[in-house]
Length: 613
Image (cartoon, rainbow, N blue to C red):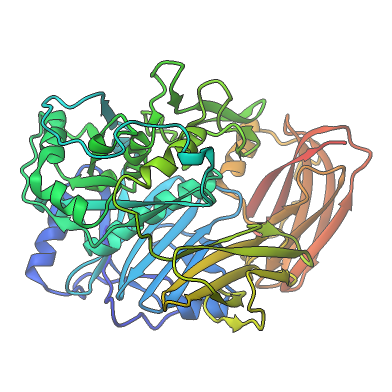
């Protein structure tokens, strides 16, 4: 019920494609890896598993101005991801997180010492790429129907009470002095069982990817300036036998394990996670955690195959930072269920701490953050972000931080428009002053230009149709060195190839110019296609549409109201290959919600626009 694909970790595929299928019979014949893959194919959570080759990310980004065009085997469509968070150290070590238009689509790529892991969400489907010990790779598609059946649980206190207490057990809302530090860095120690190892490729890359996904969710939730999760050390194998009918007992045994406690102290870990494959309650329970934040109860269990696919790793760590399920008392910081969209175009979403995973999104509830126009929380009890902000300074001090090493964090705008001039600040702590600031910047996230600015701040004007990735290397007088990255999205920028050309004509003569016959048709298009840029949005009636064509094509642009009625045909013209920005003035329209549809060949892309004055 799933697919996996393989590639060499050290020999990149000589192709412009990010993912290339390996033909049957051409896979590597490592018996141990093949047995592992066959086991994965029997996992009901996985829909398909196939071998693939992974392309050279550096070359692809350089060729496409920092954007990532890609296809997923089995989907007859090319996607374009724009950079959201980029840390590119080398071709063998990088993190690249991208978003796909205004969709829920996203790409996370992690490479550690040449071992690639990828988590891809497109077309309401979930894929992961794993790298194995022999360098081969697989692409797995998860079965969302099976994933939606899972649940997680929390425990108030351990069933056995022999867990040793340490400093920081009592949760205090504010840190000493009542002031929050610029950034709370929380060390996470990851263990894994032998069974879990069979569900994963390279364990270091997988652990890094889990941490990266939580940092992505923190950024989505406006918490990236307050909390940063770090991997305490390489994930550690733990001799541990899962009990399928007793996940609560397993959690207690894990927390009481003397080896685990010793390693937690050794690596100064604030939170501890055990990756398992316990098939708890016949596979329906995906994770468990104590109700934090309490130092001696900062332990959780996560089923490895659900760690990233339905964000269970970040969900359980959310519990340890004070987050609660939606059915907890109103005094708790809870997951949030809400609707977004308008009228007949409404859809349901649930923030990360919501117990079900069917409509879960990568946001902790936060009334100050929106998801597609709707608040992701409220100020009564559905504000997990506020709880995590207040808890993080205490949690980050659970272990010995009396002599903190130097750290640096870039703060400042994460988005802007063409020609906008902005300033960013390098915030440093630890180490011995004076500090030496070495700034550099990039538009593709791969090739950096050194700046002559050697101060704490950096000012730059965004280039037209280009994003910006900043890099700071800090050196203290006592010889410590740290690096941080900061990605700035240009909201006017689009990828180099957005709408593929199709031979079929657009705007057919026999097409009814006054009505879309099926509301559901428009509704489905909104969900499926979002590959052009429309800004500003909301607008007073004056807006622009940016798109590009790789071949000569007939292009049609139409405006509809929420009932599906055609209001105006804005464009019907044959255009040559190239980049286009069309400006429109619709001041005569009433305030409200409308839909702009652009068609090229047989590709239709529809986006919502709000006119407000």
